[in-house]
Length: 290
Image (tube, rainbow, N blue to C red; front, side):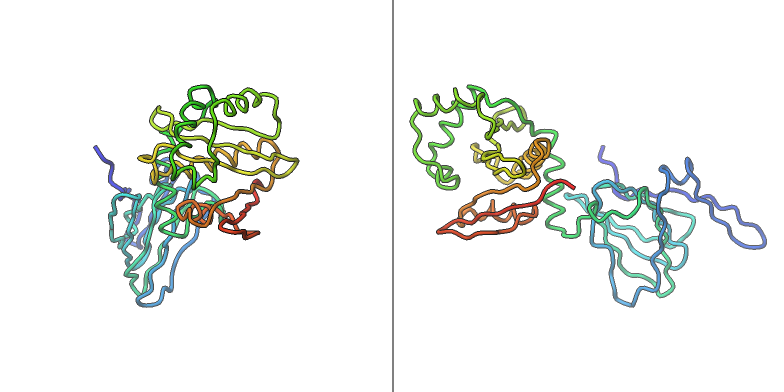
């Protein structure tokens, strides 16, 4: 059964003849320790707010005055709810795009958050959120392993495809030369390569080359075309950035042809910027680590 996106909790009311009193306690209405509290008020007529998601943050929203409509989107479905009572709170977990509409003039929306403000936890572009969500959902199905003889043989077939060869700027490969290259991999410190699997089946290759003290060049491709557009490329970048960080690399570079629009769009969204243009290609780079 699919859980609803809108999860309302009861806020205990302890008021008496003197007036109202609402209580939110840890273990009661609050299922997490609170590290930050803020409130939204004075919103101008016709203005909507929010338009972001959080990767890790958990929140409890309580409309302590007036009313507001909140819309939640998890990448596949969308649900809305009107908050108009301090007796109800809306729990918003990580990985949900949220928007706030139809604020009443007197609306005061109080938010209890599980962590301090961290801009890195925000996703402020809906298209970027949808991509992040696809990667998150597929991450359990994407795995990385040894570049073994099975992956080697598959890569020979993948790179024989004219389109993949063009996109990766790979020359025609002779099997003998490939085997000689494979035999020399264990002795190389400037080159790391892994096989990529999706749903347990090999689908591509990812690696780092020209590894130096603080720089390395990313490379990768998905050899099974039916797996294009499933978020695997972002998972490959995540893996490569992690491996580069473990090597002490702080600048990750890559080369991409201008006609590879899908890859260029992905790299830009992931924070890569162009530092050199060539004939039909560009060189991009990104700082990684803290």
